[in-house]
Image (cartoon, rainbow, N blue to C red):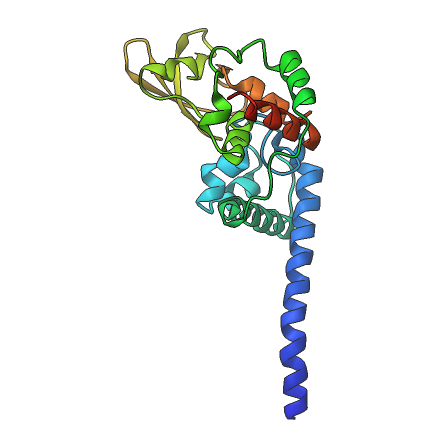
Amino acid sequence: MKRFLLVMALVIPALARQDERGLDERGAEIFAAKCAGCHGGGARGLTVETDLMRSTAVRTDQTGPVLRAGHPKANPVPLSEPEQADIAAWLHARVQAVADRGKYPFLNILTGDPKKGQAFFAATCARCHSVTGDLAGIGAKYDPSVLQSLWLSPRRRRGAEAVKTARTVTVTSRDGRVVAGTLERIDEFNLVLRDQDGKYRSFALHDEEPKVEIHDPLQPHYDLYRVLRDTQIHDVTAYLATLQ
């Protein structure tokens, strides 16, 4: 009997770990087949709005109603209850991984080729940035790991400089009425903007109504996510670090 209990004590945790791996793989496969077309393979989105790692529904564990009803802005994707559970579990694991990213030690960031990084910068980034202007001396201001994160995921400015990176939006209703202003918040269901008079306006989003047009000065950075290779990331970071 003691031997049996000892064997079970070893087997049950192993089975649990195997089930966790299977659950993660199932959720990833279902997500890739039915959701990645809009939300990207890693659920980080093809735009800021489709990034599920920033989704209120995902972060507050309210994915169930959304998965059961289908996406409100697209044709509902039929999902069985087991598929809903697998996707929800996979998304929660992804959110936890993002939350834990700060616990991992950074290795040497400067492994790229500065000359190749300079060529990439000239071809891709120089239209908006200048090494003698806004990026002058940036290599001396930041640690390499911070420098890399800043150009990959630039932060929006605050105060008087905020207008340079603020997202603007135009909302057109079915009857042709147009409201424009600074985008304050948008998620799967609602949009909030601040108009030219400083008043806050909110809109419920459903299907294609109302029509929403967003202009984001930082969108070129997010567009790079689709085409960037690891070597290019390290090359650009190595070049920026030379701007002392």
